[in-house]
Length: 117
Image 1 (tube, rainbow, N blue to C red):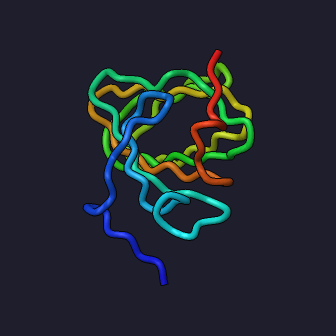
Image 2: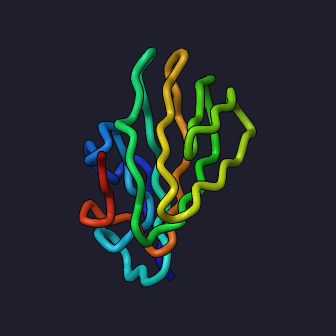
């Protein structure tokens, strides 16, 4: 059985500029096909616009509001919104206030699968 405590996972900054706390991924568990992390953005901050070549991604907004852009389409998002980000889709999230959201990637998140313009 694999269980990881939130407060035992050390946050880090991803290539897109968000602060991530990996909850379950290749770095801390025998994960093969997906990853789960919590991301935070301070008020007014945004991830750098990017895409993942292989990973499909879900965002689930826990706290805060912001603007989600996927392949040129924009929508306001807030707590309770689940967002599908297909592989190869350009995307960026901008926080209105402080934001906290879950990021699920399949296959698991990898820095080398993150691309910028």
